[in-house]
Image (cartoon, rainbow, N blue to C red):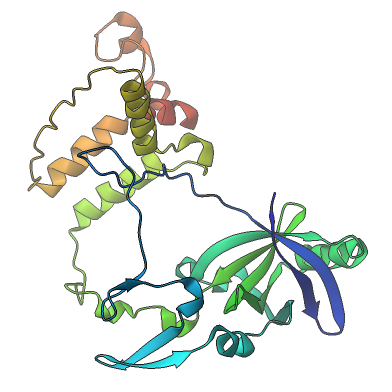
Length: 289
């Protein structure tokens, strides 16, 4: 793994030297913009509209537009002087993870002990594990200050950058939300039954990026010179009867017994309770088919 940051976690007078590694990676398939006429990749050139000339990096500064067409300018050194470049993840408070809504989370990083910080690292990890608490901290990465949650994942300390409160848009800005949601009791019962039928322990391995797989197959076909034909999608119909849609959904995930509905003697002689009882694993097998 590539080290993206070095510093220390601090809580009270305790300092834990750590190295930071990105916990996630972007698996999107990268494509370039190509000139269709000749097949050449396009270049992007920094140009000044006023001077009509290419601008080199050393001639570029940052600017904030406070009025239309009017800017205040900043040199890189000015902005760098404002960042909290202390190389410190300072824990401000300890809270329960359940108190933080997932909307606040941004990006995850693994924190590993530096060569001299193994003992302090293990102490903080075990103390947080046994207390069930996570740390709320401030950190600066690449000249940007951020809030972060420090928590334990297996035998590793993990840092999750989180949004500041004023970066979260209010739900009140969402249009067309019902003020007093009214639901039909029968529909509610069926909807809860459907949720129960589809409930299963979370297993991330079962979820795949179907779009990425399709793009990769198409790339391989094009490289091999194969002709590609894409079947048109069937138009979807709007379901008006909510009860019918719920009933159809329940039928689709309902577990089926071997020979069910065939009217055989074995089916008829089995007690009704035994015919209905199925392990949950069988329910999920029929759901994924």
